[in-house]
Image 1: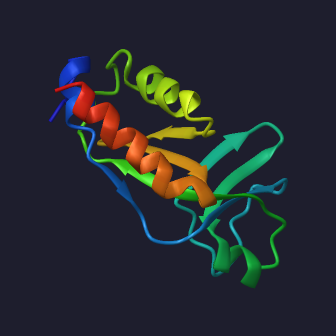
Image 2: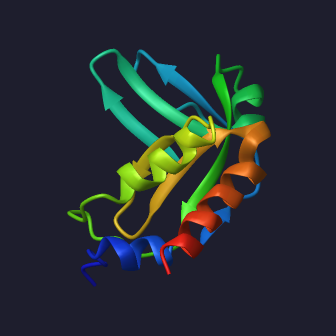
Image 3: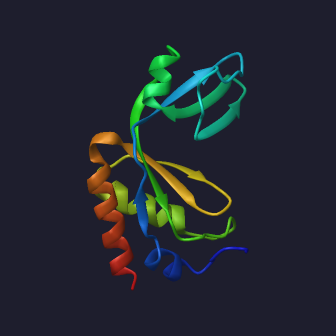
Length: 133
C-alpha cells in the first residue's frame, strides 16, 4: 500500500486516536537504550539519541526527561510524499494554541501534544476532519 495523497481525503479521514499513557522525551549522549525501556520513537542526532518513552519507564530507569506528552495517532494511511497534511494539522492545532511534535511512520502520522491538552487536541482534529468533508 502506498497511502493516500489527496489532502481533502486525508483530512476527512484523520480519525485521531489517543493512545493510552503519558510519554516523555529523553536523550542519551551514549546512543544506548537502557534496559527496561521500550521507546515508541527514536531519533539519532549528532548530540545523542532522542527517545520518546512511557513516563513510567523513564522514571524506573532514572532517565532525565522533558515534555509530558499525549500520543495521538492519525489513523488515515498517508503516503510519505503526501503534501499538506502536516501543515493543515499543525495550523489547526496552532490556532487552538496547542504545540505539536509530528513523527511520520510508514503507515500513519503520530502527534505528541501536551499531556494536559490531549482531549482538546483530539477535538480540534475531529473538527478539522468534519470541516473537510
